[in-house]
Image (cartoon, rainbow, N blue to C red; front, side):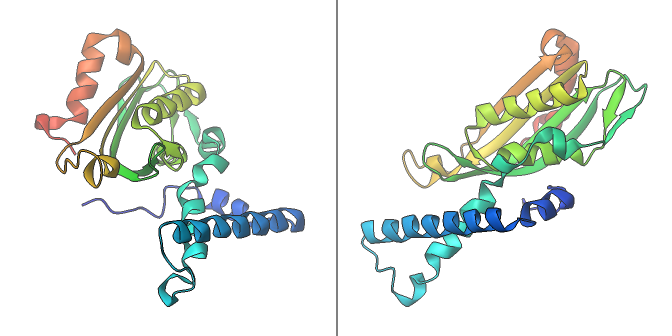
Length: 219
């Protein structure tokens, strides 16, 4: 069972996001007020009464929830990684498997969720292991398509680490396919994004995919 982690975003970045000056605070307040008005109007359009007891605080709750679920727009992967780069002679694959992720489909704004498996081969530098899930989180917490999400994670690690190669596999289920449309409950989507030796060398690619799916197991 996938459980959300409280540790994927650097606490320092979360603190910085809450330390707004007076002008920023005013802008933030205006933004949230406008957001709430939009949600209130949505309730009216679907035939609900925003003044009903159970819905009176819904516009505020939805505005806060969507701001949290899309907070990745305010984060930069290079800043998330920060100075957690270390000179090291390691020349073999480094993988972090089963990184839980939660995102929202940009087409219907419905959730998709699953796991990411991320690997790289260092070229003189390694990164603190906790930074890899945090990079995934930066891009997952935006409106996304799964294909682009994997590409963005791979590009970010390639840009910062300058490794010999990067591989990203994402396995996810999409509520836009489960609760509407084709309504297929057991389907899952698997995407891969490969850079450097992961793309060019068949043995490296095979090792990566074998480690990502041991015994043919998946999400």
